[in-house]
Every structure is written in C-alpha cells, then in structure tokens.
Image (cartoon, rainbow, N blue to C red; front, top):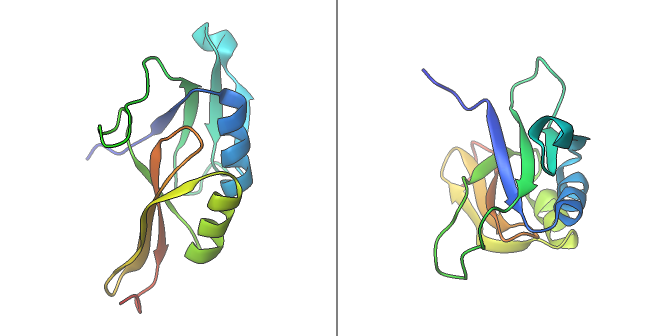
Length: 131
C-alpha cells in the first residue's frame, strides 16, 4: 500500500516559515537549493528509523487563495504528546486556530491551525479517554 514519504510546505517567506516550524515542532532544516536550482529547504522531522516522514519547504508558486477559497497544498497532521502545550506553542509562534480542539471519541484530540503562511495543518494527541 502506498504511504506518504515526503511532504512540501509552500510559503511566501522561507525564513518566517522556518522559524515557525522550528519553534513549534523543533524541526531541522537543510538548504537544498543547490539541488533544486531554486530556494528550497529540506525538512528533517526526526531521527531516521523512527516513524514519520521528512519533506521540503519552497516558495509558493502561485498566490495563496484568500479566506474561504480553499487550499492549494496538502494538509498534514502531526502527532503530538500534549495537544494543549503544542497549541500554545503554535499561537506563540504566530499561528492561528482554524478549527478548535475536538474529541475523536475514544481515540484522540484533534485540531487544525494556520501557520504563518496561511497553510492548514493538524495536530493529533492520542487519548483513549477523549470524549
């Protein structure tokens, strides 16, 4: 069965987006522009051998759609240990709530946010007591 092996985040400002994801998730970045021939950052989300995927960050190739006009990129959901602490870190780094924390009854807490570039992403805290 095919599985995601890479993701890309589009942004208007690479430095601002990098600072946001470093602050919230502690991700590491590498300059891969010499490979792509344009500004591009490799995104390392954790050690090799652990579950998860790495990806990339690039400048947005087209204008971001305005509010209420849908998305122009994939929405990724990150697993977190503490939903509330992560939500606080997101807002302190300049992110905003898109859909507030909700219980996936008997499974987890889920919520959606907008990063500093207007991209939607989710966070997911497993919790069998979520109700």
